[in-house]
Image 1: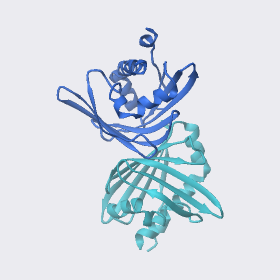
Image 2: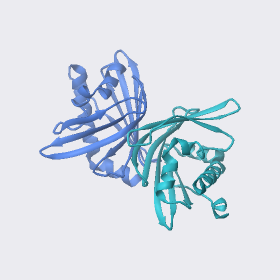
Image 3: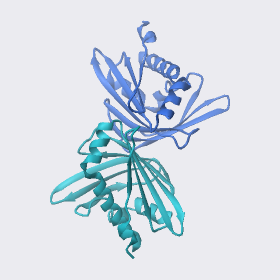
Image 4: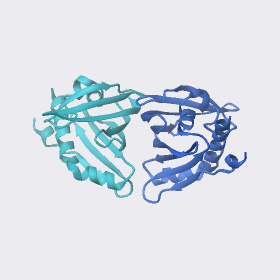
Length: 160
Length: 160
């Protein structure tokens, strides 16, 4: 089956507020796509570029929980952490996100898992920051190719 | 001493992003103003309008912690909850905030405690949401008088 590998994430750069919205469909039901976002044993298989190994410090994906993980390649380490504001199983994750290379930067992220029927799910992920400059620098940094690669990895995991 | 009771919070409604910034000086050092934001026994004495009793479910003000509290008056209850993204003692609190009357609304809040010397502190509190409509409705709802009353209560607590 080749449809999953050609599927593209749509990235919308909001002109009015410093927000990016990503929409991506998956050939798996919401329960399964959601679980791939919350189970550390699954997360490490897709969340990030292929060239990095992902190490999870903790990933307590529930309302009021928190997370921290590190991407590692050739002695190069990048840490990320945040807290989970609200988690509704198979429906919604609202969380904060900081890349520790820019420790005072923080994004408010919201993911919804929409049941498209026939075992398919639409993921909508928004990321809100406090300046257009910060948002646009993030988009210009190669964010799109990273997002496409990451969700191709998730397709492969969901197909297993 | 009457200077504290006349001190006003300055409220800046950002024209470019859906953010409100509040700046307020206090006659107490950063450690003391910070502690009033983190110790539940102190928080219930000032965080909200005078006419409400504040009941705290939990208030775990540390990086990765969370909180929930309720304002109660005459059988009228309003719940609020969020998570703490980052807490640096006497310096910084970054948290999320939801008023449970609007359960899908969420703000990203950032508070800094700046040492002005001579036992004084400047608190700067920003609140970022994902739409101007939501931000402007919040400002129009009487937010300013609530903020002024709340910080007058904090002045009184800090003067004790």
